[in-house]
Length: 88
Image (cartoon, rainbow, N blue to C red; front, side, top):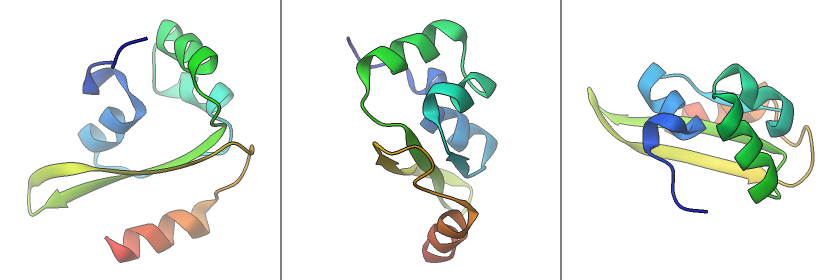
């Protein structure tokens, strides 16, 4: 399994839309943001079940995405997201 282009990932979606994503169950929630083939590939290749994706910008310039993942469903919520946004 190779790397996917940034535009076809949850990190890419977060960066492109300038929005923090907090996904309680990646196997279910990713379908709102990615195509079915990408979701199926993610399910097969990743042990992670929940995640937060925080886009990082220097002014108007994108510099990356901070991603925190966990193997447990529901490991993160909006409190975690707001905390990370405050730090960024």
